[in-house]
Length: 292
Ligand SMILES: Nc1ncnc2c1ncn2[C@@H]1O[C@H](COP(=O)(O)OP(=O)(O)OP(=O)(O)O)[C@@H](O)[C@H]1O
Ligand SMILES: O=C(O)C1=C[C@@H](O)[C@@H](O)[C@H](O)C1
Image (cartoon, rainbow, N blue to C red; front, side):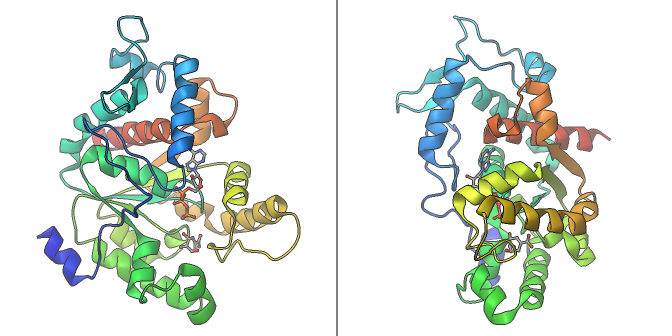
């Protein structure tokens, strides 16, 4: 039925060729832009520091420890490295999936906050389909890129289509949806997103500016600038957007704060937090929300 709906909506699950790579044994495949090489480096780095207990006391609760009998990571026959974090993530997702009763998860947050990266991980472990609402809008406008939609048709047209896409998705089940950074500003969008569980990924603005400066802002029309120092300009625009939107992000059911994760893990810098750690925290927060 879901496939039929997708067809009728002209939607296809978005997993661009560079976005997922199948890994046996249900281990995690990553991800757009947080690329494979970087993940392998991260895994190596995790191995070297023997991985701290993941997300504080909760990891201890899962009785996964870094002893020589129970090493922090193992190499599957395929050569894939599975870390202790991957195992915690898998276990948490198995616990939570039945409690979701098929409800969709909507990820909200500023541009560059990792909605796509984290969304793909969550969909993989929960056995959900993944959608990126920006990609669906592009498809609905004949494959026109977001930046061109803004240029040719204006932001109001884009926002109208964004609402349409969220409306259509809201009738479906078992989806993880990465929404556009500005989806939170229209109250009608919350009506749709609140049919599922909304998760705000809260990343400090300077970390966002660093990430977005590294990948470039050409595809993000509200951040793009022609001149000046890229980091400073990006931070300035992000700060303005944040002023206008911070309250709206507060409508989400669940907040995943990178500053809180860093504190739990004893990390000095949010840039040291990897996507798996964020996905675990998202599941923990969703679980807490479901218990209320
Ligand atoms: N935990 C992380 N640490 C460092 N970089 C990350 C992390 N998560 C994602 N990134 C990088 O940040 C950039 C933005 O990530 P992603 O596309 O997932 O964000 P997004 O919220 O979907 O962005 P947008 O809404 O602008 O499309 C990518 O280059 C990605 O590789
Ligand atoms: O923050 C925003 O308003 C936007 C974020 C992107 O995901 C796109 O939805 C678009 O570039 C607008």
